[in-house]
Length: 173
Image 1: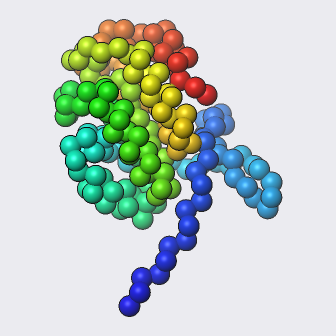
Image 2: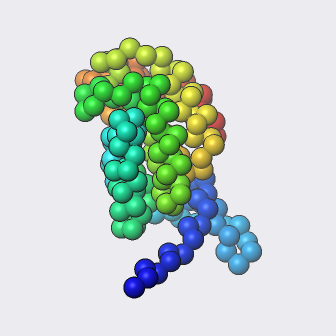
């Protein structure tokens, strides 16, 4: 018995801020309209780490499951120390593979940029800027500049809204 062929996944559109909602541009009867996008998210913090450890097949199975269960976005850390040890430069490389796989399945990815910054010294500006350049190439990518900025695992600078506002300027629109 042949499995039915799933319909093609429509191209993902970059999301826009629409007040308290996120919207995307959809083509409806030949018109480009902003429509409300529904966030059905799932935290899967270790996906980039898993790719960096050679577990791409596990990541693909997870993404297939997420897409089949109407998840619209997965939250992933691009660096970490406490949950797993993922250096920023390795996380960025793995994130690109993740973005390709997720986009092929119609999923958005929210990349956490600044995680465990009190535990690992690295150039925050460079990491955020490089993630921004990466995400600019994938309409399915969003950046969470800092997961829990006031958490004790964060560097004191990351707890300052002005610092995060400065870093946000490094991310393309």
